[in-house]
Image (cartoon, rainbow, N blue to C red; front, side):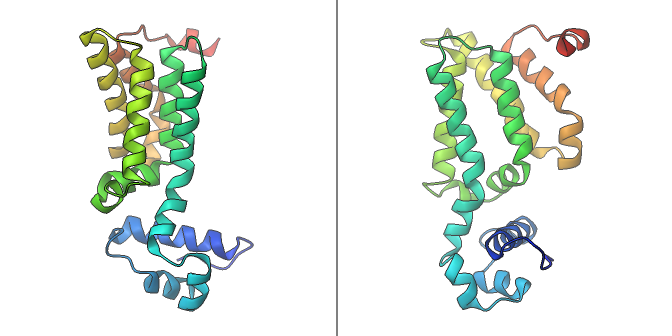
Length: 188
């Protein structure tokens, strides 16, 4: 349960909504349950979020905005290091692992045009930028596999995900067909 703290009401609502969405599912969670958990009136909750959909949009915004920034950076760069791109993408997934997990488990979130469809479009844009212009079939498949490694990281328990980051990144780089830097080369 979210306890009163210095955190603002809006942040408490978002934290509680995410907690309930993860525990019982997006569809199964009502605004009434969120209000009750926080000991708020429904009117107080509706003041901040008049619809459950707005909670979903706000919760997913940091992940989706991060993906959007990555696409923008890739499009504006003349050249990019595929290892650095995979690393940045993986770090974004690790930072927002709860949201990535929610999107992966909840069909209602994936079908939302401003959430699931946007996430899919951004992932495809990252894949296209990483594969390059008019890639050979092998490069296109390797790029899809490398991103698949990162996407599958959502299935790893959150506590283990950060600990195993280097292994996940090495697997993604290997799928791409790039040389995996050795531990000593990574530290330089």
